[in-house]
Length: 132
Image (cartoon, rainbow, N blue to C red; front, side, top):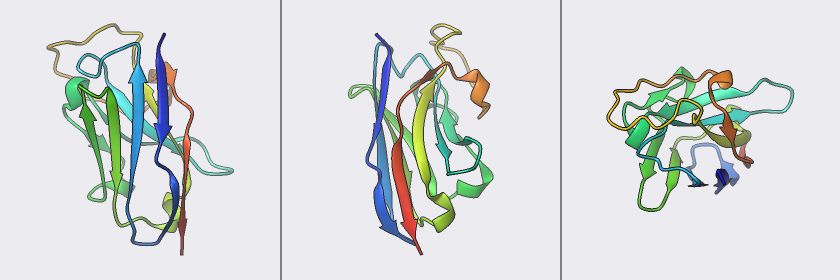
């Protein structure tokens, strides 16, 4: 059974840091691309960053480049999103997602993208609130 569960959200002041975790089961991170998305009230879901299988070739949306970092721990089946220098505009519900419909991607060079429709497995989100 495929599951993704995000955690680690909370309230932080501007300039602070948080690390989100996404625990996955039913698939392995060395074979499938994963991503973080966020959605603020009244706004569309936005891609934050993604990595290919085994955490390769990370890609970030422009607004978080240099501040956010995605990493994966295959042994723990966990994807992390380290968020530094947080800004009020980062306030949103953050969720993780994976692309499973293409099958395992072992050994393939993968450059991920942040197109919502590409991702077929989603976890429940965790709220991040950045106070000014």
